[in-house]
Length: 502
Image (tube, rainbow, N blue to C red; front, side):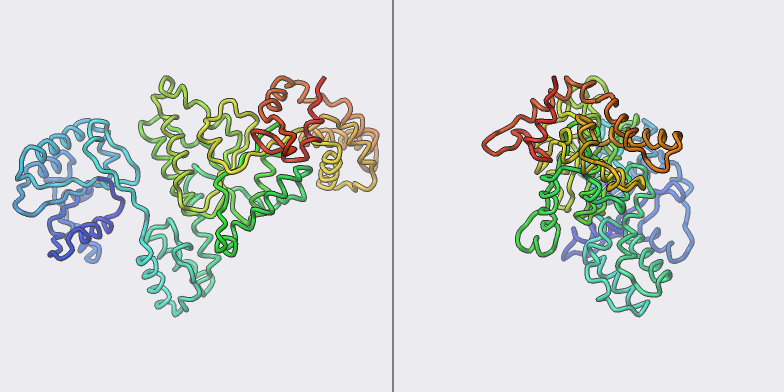
């Protein structure tokens, strides 16, 4: 069995003995610093500031031998092994535990249970069928509330300052909760809910598995075109509000932005975070993978637990067609690790009760696992920008580079930019500004800019087969004036017109 805290063990032990005498003295704890000790001795040592040492059981093999030889009477005995992930590097440790299991199975008098306490699940294959895995979900609501009340009493603060302690401290340990309360009071002189809330996001600094994206400088004002996507996003904002949820609205589980390269898919996700007022957490599956056995799966569980604690939020997987690929060949290439990792994430997306929206961007869905495509509430196709969208995009890029859009004929520039995507237009603008400066112009020269737009090699023409494949995949249904397998982010007639390649 895996647990992550001795207090959890005590609580589980107590819950299992309702109406009986609490016999915690039948629990022993192994720690490499002091050997095998009764749990009461360990707990007493916290207050006494003196840890007794049993030199005969400091070595893990001696401790397991003592457990094997220990005699039991009527009452079951529990043996807590800390840091099993360290000891399982020694293959003989697994063998000794397996001997213990055989003893318990064959000897009716061997009334014993070994409990492995670890921050990550590392279990040898030969022991897996005998173990029950228990994941620690953190302090329960009543425990969190008692910690907050105690802190408020100590600091003489009104508990009403923290109306929802469960949400504020979700995913934190009791130590982190107490530390957060103390530090917040020291910094502000009061318990500030916003200051306390930020502590949860500080967890991201302790790991490189996840990254919080700063969306403060992104908004739909910076996203040219994509009118239908914007309308949907603005409408769905209501599902994230308390009023909308009281009405019965449910936040979307997932959204996918797929289409041509450089058309603003990633930007749309960042703007989505601003519009919905939610943090964006980037999930890079490459950082979760490890060569060590079982480590990839452990990293996934750690990352998902952190995400759950940060909810409500948006989880962003960029270029998901690459990140999520490889499940079909996983059995031959990595022993099934990729398949298991993707299975864990897919199940989590479906089953999590946390308010989390999975946002995926992709250039193609050819290699995407179908279970992820089906998990999203809405799929959006970002095509080549229409003439009106190109005018909008040019205006945005000019403003971002300190140029006055009113000084330029945007309609003519947009015509020169036919079949260019937003990224290519920005590249042309940078090149034209450099050329204008070198030519001694006081500002961006419109003729130079127009020339750059006109002679820019079109990616859509370079990747014509891939683009045509994407268009054919989306399809078009004239009855609803939209795509068949995904919705068009802009007017579909204009988007489809942009793909008239010949």
